[in-house]
Image (cartoon, rainbow over all chains, first blue to last red; front, side, top):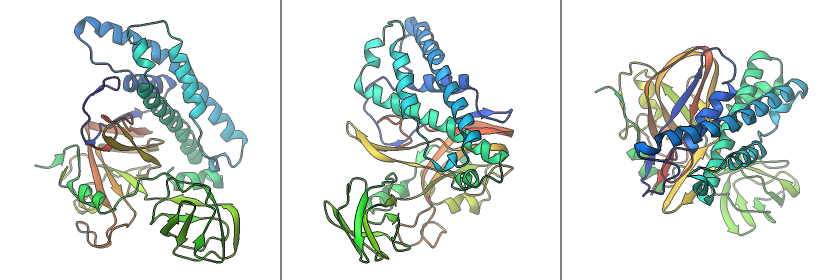
Length: 161
Length: 227
């Protein structure tokens, strides 16, 4: 079902997808951005509008990518410079709000009005926030892998948070 | 036929109606107590439920909310060990985990799956570098509603780094023991299964990073929802 569509919801479980980085390390910012865009912008359309969907989704990906890149780089730097950074709660709210602001600055398209819908805004904010938080979470896991003597990082990884 | 079918487990439905699962997020209000089981002046009772464990300075070991007595007070199972005056308490609900299935499972998993022990009993959990048996613990995001549907999600998404293993799907289960009695082959009542998720194909990682992406938290797509 589409995030944008208002359909009769059914109880049950959702569809889980996966991301793999075979090289190790965090997933590339583009992958984060693309997977996020795919999830938050997936209107059900007829064939005539299919290219428009691809185009808008590509634009959304392009504005999300630098947000993810910045969030990852900042988390990586903070982990390097602050001994017990892993003991602090991950905060992705401001990054998510910035990401949405950038999406709203995109040139107008046929779904512009739908994206201002309150339900879509909150669902997208939550999802973008979760993805950014996960990117930061992975930085912490990687830091823990590389720094076995950092107590805060090891506790974080043991907590599986 | 061996394999996975994405489904909410039937057993979870009855367990939910029996207060068998609590998905509330961690809450951190302030409160006061004085060497007593009575906690008062709680800054917010939102997101606090009977059965949640809590910790804090001068909070007795193993404290659990045993009764909510007013909009600003509750009774603990264990008396506070000293004076608490507006101190911060940390309340936690159940701990849910996501365990991964191996490639070529022997068992059949779906709506009829009952417990994590169904997976382990068939030796169907994946293994390999970077994967610890039992899977990873998830961070609760408090349940919410949209329209006529209630749903939950978890954040951040579970990830495995420096990992070498293959998997075809996941099992969402509750490690906390909220209901007594046997659940499947688990006589302690823990490990109750909530959902089986088929990835639609083998996901392999070799000294890499695998991340499971929870769907968007909406009434029609959330990872676990009730209409």
